Length: 324
Ligand code: PBG
Ligand code: ZN
Image (cartoon, rainbow, N blue to C red; front, side):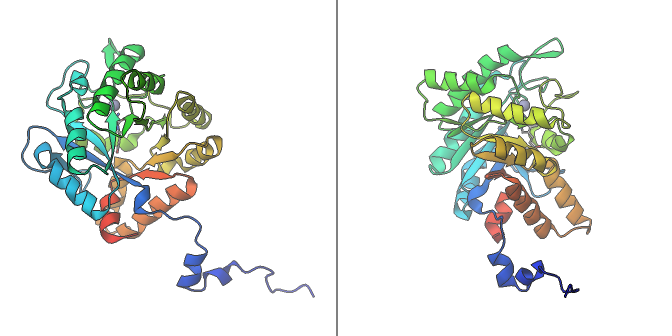
């Protein structure tokens, strides 16, 4: 009797909340989340970032108390971005051993030694032109920038950073940083490589948050968003250069890339839900179009499902406060 009764009924496993949660495949927890923070020197009060509702620049003088609050809420790790008042042509404040990069890690480690500190390692927030390295004419000089990345990495490691996280998108940056760290005696400092970083329009709000001076774009060093094979190639290069973990950035519009890299490498893989992704959810919810809490969780769960182990997200404190 060929019948109109379906042979298989996936709906059986969806009949109630218990069944649905038993058969849920992907999930994320607070252990998987890293909170990126913006720390500004020389100010006394929090500065709200208008394009990222709920996110503030933290005055350096209040960093310790903020970190205490995060630690109490259960945050495991932060990524530090400095908002500098000491800009110059090369971003030399980043390798001053009492510059903002060093002070951020030192303050955090003095306040909460268990907090895993990832030091974003770039120059764009410290250069007068806003590019991610040494500018020669209209070109960012790759190899001159590598030397400065090595200097900054050593200073951050000395200040206590657990991870150096190079985001400058220079060729060979992981190898340059690894050898600078090893030569300075920091063989235990890890590298979280921004290994596949696209030249994305989704970084828009970050430019306000970090106060970067850039006019123009980063397309000669960051990747073309349309390139899938090259995306895998870039992450595999960083693996060969000695990265401890690799990353795809942005996350939500690049889930195919996360999956490709998950299958091509055995390294831990992170994904960065960037400022524009955060802003779209916040403003969409403010306009009444979507449910913020649900879309936030759906977006983070989808990034895990695609294959990420860790997620950098500005929602980390929301999850810490309200639960999964
Ligand atoms: C700069 C840097 C950027 C981000 C992290 N590091 C911006 C850029 O490359 O232009 C983006 C983070 C975000 O948008 O949330 N090296
Ligand atoms: Zn940069």
